[in-house]
Image 1 (spheres, rainbow, N blue to C red):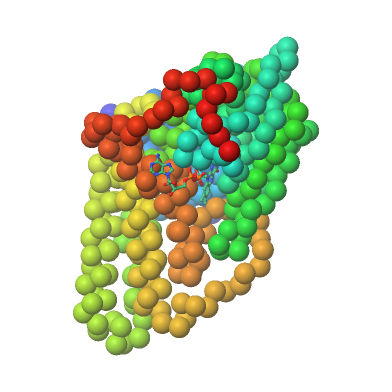
Image 2: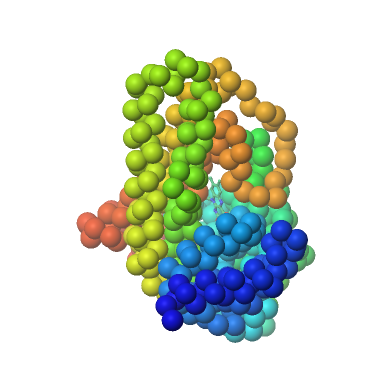
Length: 394
Ligand SMILES: Cc1cc2nc3c(=O)[nH]c(=O)nc-3n(C[C@H](O)[C@H](O)[C@H](O)COP(=O)(O)OP(=O)(O)OC[C@H]3O[C@@H](n4cnc5c(N)ncnc54)[C@H](O)[C@@H]3O)c2cc1C
């Protein structure tokens, strides 16, 4: 039996057991996880069947047509980034304890890498973790932490050895976001919402059983997160004509007669549609080729193209709207339950500005593609071989 036939039969079983129109999202997603249709490339017992990621595209397409809830939409950072990190570097006990509730979004997760002094250069981070018996004591500050305000757990990377070179002295942990000493404060974005936050840690205790990977190997663990992040952000596959390009199509179809008849607008829309279709087909090909395990650096290509294309699409949509484009529904401060709200062209136009920053900036994507995919010479680095404590920082 082909993988496609097998997973589609399991989807039928899932839909006959649990109707997405009447079940709660948690119930439906729980059944999906138990049948191994959560992350199909994960091992059996942990939400998967050990198949290639390609099989997930058949599952997602079938379930979304049946009106099933999206695990990505409900817990984007948890589903796309934290889960593969926990799977790859956590003990079986940790995987058993956390993955199912993460998938159902009973536990939303966040990712705490960036700091005020360490964004593109994550390995420069200063948050400290000091061992105390079976526990670690964390002190420091993270920033831009998406959905931290509704997260029960997160993965946090901290420096455990200041005398090692910067890529070596870090360790990754699972953090209980409600532990004493964790403080989450909103950061308001250009959209008026606060999707992301600052997270302050003061003498926060984490048990050593909640360490992911070996002590000092946090950089290696973080690469699992970051590579999955790029594929998760840049590799989404919507049906043809759906996704971001539908924003431009809808705005154009609602534009006044002179705009719709204007050959310049028609030409721009055609070009955007072709680019969106090229990205979609490239992502389908990349997902078909993807093997079980951590994605490679080529995932940066989809992320880079997506970020820049989304911004051009949103610009186009706004240009077709005339004065209406300047009307932004409301600017009430809100701490949303979901990230990435693109419900109106105005909101999308503001939100997509972050696409070329979040998950690694477009400049950093170009560096990765140049150095790690095309094999071009690396940029000069003078802080790789000295202890972190001796690297100048502000
Ligand atoms: C909406 C949003 C959500 C986010 N969510 C999270 C999250 O959940 N968790 C988390 O940990 N972080 C998150 N981030 C942070 C994000 O990962 C960082 O903002 C990003 O990595 C850039 O870091 P920085 O902001 O410190 O900018 P900097 O690293 O200071 O970069 C400033 C500028 O310098 C350029 N630059 C830096 N280094 C190089 C280089 N080597 N070569 C060429 N140019 C370079 C950059 O491209 C950029 O233009 C989020 C950011 C946004 C906007």
